Amino acid sequence: MFIDETWTATNMARSHGRCAKGERLRMGFPHGHRKTTTLVAGLRMSGMVAPMVLDGPINGDWFEAYVTQVLVPELRPGDVVIMDNLSSHKRASVRERIEAAGASWTPRKTGSVRRPEMIHCFCVTAEAEMTGQPGFFDLSDRYEALSAAGDPLERLAAVVDFEVFRGSLVAALRRSPRGKGGRPPFDPVLMFKILVLQALYSLSDEATEFQIKDRLSFQRFLGLGLDGTVPDATTVWLFRERLVKARAIDKLFARFDVALTDRGYLAMGGQIIDATVVPAPKQRNTQEEKVAIKEGRVPERWKDKPAKLRQKDRDARWSVKYTKAKVKGGADPKASKPVDLAIPMFGYKNHIGIDRKHGLIRTWDASAANAHDGARLPVLISPDNTASGVWADTAYRSKKNEAFLAKGMFTSNIHQRKPHRRAMPERIARANAKRSVVRSAVEHVFAGQKHRMGLVVRTIGIARARIKIGMANLTYNLQRLVWLEGRTAPAC
Image (cartoon, rainbow, N blue to C red):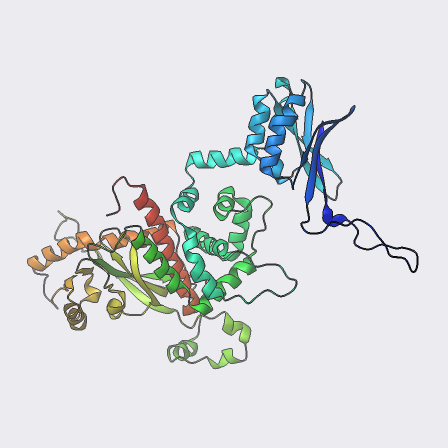
């Protein structure tokens, strides 16, 4: 039995005609509402069966009612019901109705070579089920399996209302009214969620396009079906470029911070300040080119090579990260001491401030890797925190910063430095160890960004690096909110 629909509408009536010269053409023509009438029926070898006329276009609800009330009573053992791949036919409830009648289904393929179509068959016999072929409801079954396995993106979409970003995105994009023709733009929230996926899994634009097409979890998170249009790598790049030019990342981050406050996650318990280097691709420049870059000039050899100039990052800088070697307890005092390491790093620096209570990033900034951490302290201090305590390492200890904190009525818990050419006093060591118990929480943020999220800057220039780092901080807060919501304790 073949099932199909056909329709007719009053706007299909002819509005013009011909008649003899000098005579008026008179004919009936419907005015007002253009009404659609749909006929759904089945076709056997013996003729038409199970007809139903709908006063309107077909949809999922109408088709489910047709299957339940008209089609199922007409089925006989041995019948095979064949339908095309119309979206109204793909409801899981349709399968439930047919299986409740003792039917099993078998997929079929038919159509020309130029345009193949998937035809879904339901066999009213228990022995007609076939295995090893893609089925009608395999997609919904696969989604259920992903949910049972614990899809983190499904949890993220359930906890976070991404619509809160729509206003900021629309204001940043400033799209002009559409003219005639052209493809409509992708939804800005959809494109923003793609940037979230890039930050979560450290994907390039090309890899993002491939993974969206390949992974069902990505498609469900974005609200795309198997037949949905996936933005290509160029579209993703252009969307991010428009956000860069609009400097929208600060507004997006602030908008989500307001959403966190509305949900009860206020900045509480004090704030912890720190910074980390975000690596970028290393530049291979001559000594003369390095000097010109440090002076803020474009090297002479690059001026007549615009292609090369576009590939050179003149904002990223080298920095040296020192790691202090620790002597193990009970070691032989005569043995050689471990050597301190100095690790050169190239890229940018991510400065953040988190609240002690919830571990959420409340303030942030981005700079070149050689920027001094302590100079960013006034930018990172948030006046909205309900407590006055401020924790940071020795890089932030200075008279200027101490005066700034005292003027703002903040309590300084910044680590103290070791006296020059003298051993660390025991009381200062104990005080620093006590502060480290609190301050170490910020290292968990950097560990999550660098190890789980694979944070690295692949773009060129501080403006693009800023949105890359800002999206990493914002995405971390999204994940942190999911974890906080999963706890049994209330937010406050």
